[in-house]
Image (tube, rainbow, N blue to C red; front, top):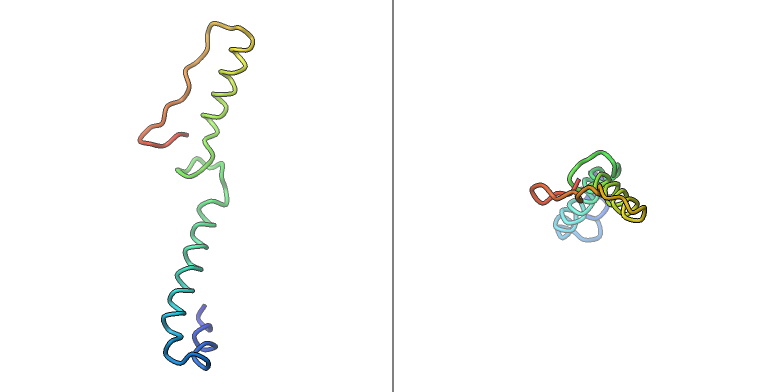
Length: 82
């Protein structure tokens, strides 16, 4: 990213600076999003809610088997379902 303005300045002049800022921002945001979502099973806010999925599977299986002791589904805490 540091060498990009040097390549653009020949063709665009001072108009290369705003383009560089926009491209650098897009690449930085994309990198940060990739780092946050590359491991979906760590238990972070944007990860896959494995506990809730497993609980729903357990509830479905117990209902199909006709058992009376069916646990309640997990509820979100502070808007996050884990």
